[in-house]
Length: 612
Image (cartoon, rainbow, N blue to C red):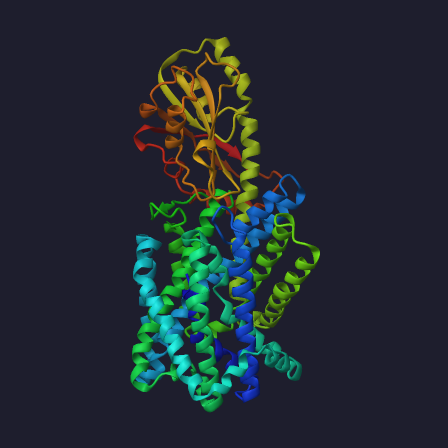
């Protein structure tokens, strides 16, 4: 979880002193000023905002901008503001995806580039080696966060120990670097060179990349372990290493070409390349796991089409693997790395999406703090100035990067945002048009009785969005086969804006006004971190005695799915190109029978056409 933020020392200070053609000079005053900005940015944003405050705003244990948006939306349920908060959350997720594409590429490249220091003759191998490493990393995702974590954990601990020792060795040689711990040097630096400081802020933000991933991964491990590891290990190690790099640059300004690897003697540089590479693999793992968590939440909330989600831990509900998301990230990371080919060039694209996500988290946090925690106005104002003011400065400092590569994460974010909002709107239109074609359920049941439709032994289950309209598969079965099963269960699954719904609150059975016609409706509620297993939910309802006698044996029940063809029309509600995008996304969605855990040998799919 600390891999992303823990590998920032590899490239942060180097980027600060190389940005904009060396606008920040490696003089003592500038070094102290930059060091102070780094230390206090990490303190305010990561230690105070994320670990100290925002992780208290978990949504039933889940973190990340989507969980935070869902929590804020629940507080304003039924009001217009709730929809706006969901859109803000979608934007935050989209920006996180931009970060998720760039982080693995820049992290691994920055580590392997240590070869240029330890063995310059191997410089041409940097990109191929990085590509192989990333390929192996994404291939290992199918084993799950737990198994990967047991291998990565000791390496991460070793990494932070080495960071601390390397930094401390330089501080002992030049204790004057400790001056950079004082916030007065940051204030003096900004006051004396406001233009230079503004440029520097565009690179200083690199030290807090990973804060949003830290929050998004909270569902994997919980707030307590994260806080203890941060304050006892990670934060001290990072601080010591930045102090050590500053001390080295003051003594030897030429070290700005790669201050991290220059901390080590020549004999240790190649081993450090190996250790740094392992650490950056772990850094990539942090955002990949976060992307899995946020993607599952988005699917459950109806913001992305259903995809195959595999639970990789029996103990931790937050540990999941999404093959489709893994493949998309892998392709995106490789394309970005092969296009930019160096960490310094990628650094120009980094930061815009990160700072945008930070600002959105702060906005949602202030809403939750006011509505849920009942913070007084002065506390809200203090948090807005301390967090939002600093983050807006970072955002402004990074806007200059847009034309130099910063457009890349914004483009990725725009694509994700359009895809999510298109899927959400398209589903609304399809559901509305589908209900018109399905007709009222009560009228259909009355028609069955009037026509005397024969009932055959067995139980038929019809997954359907609600109980007001008739499942198209049920209507087709009667019209073409002229029979209906003795036991009919219409089951609806809905995702709540909470990670988990307790088992005793998950299922509700409605007999639809009659207990002798064998037709019942079952509403199943899931949290966005629950597995939508409909057969298991029905078995639980039967075990609880919620069905009327004679429902039948659910172990042999047949499942009938209505999977219609989407017909693009000229109807209003969504632009034509977005309709085409929705249809393409629907064609690539996971099979509903797999998504809902239906038995493949007892599931029948019937076709129909629904206008979009």
